[in-house]
Image (tube, rainbow, N blue to C red; front, top):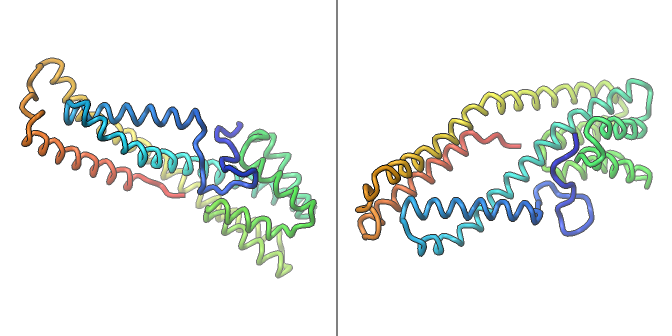
Length: 260
């Protein structure tokens, strides 16, 4: 399976920082159209005013920032799951008698077969192997990856690897225990995400229910909500209701969020 997200979203051509993501033109257009649709819905349901729609346009900026964060989270989730498989591939190489450097070379071939050469982990392994050919220390390269990824699981693996490499202990055994612990944590997080997926679907439905009710009543009984629009009292009431709706939405998003 190839990565659906491009490897390098930064302006420069260096290794990516996974907390820095620049939307592609197609992604930016999609998010922009999505934001415009939401603003149109809000301006119609709460105000029935094209003028309010124009006033709401600056809200597209925080919406695009919100969507950008969702892409960052998705990319980190993808890298985390692929990194788990990479750890086991490296450990399998060590147990087969490869040196640690050759184990990473072997892991690159395995990840390329498993995920494709455009996968995040495949390209990270390509960078790692390139740095090793330039006589860089592997522990330094892994530490740099952890600093760019901003993912605790990768940081933990890099720290354990650095300590184990310097101590000269049972490197394969230490890394296997570490990989098993990290894998268990990733699996628990994946199971939690699966279990709350139904709740997220319920949240999405509940987010749309108020708009569905209003639009249905408005279509079947024209003028029913007429007194709520184009007057000071109605505008104040609808503004308060919109604020309550947005607060409830953000609270639900926070409750159901699984951080990476």
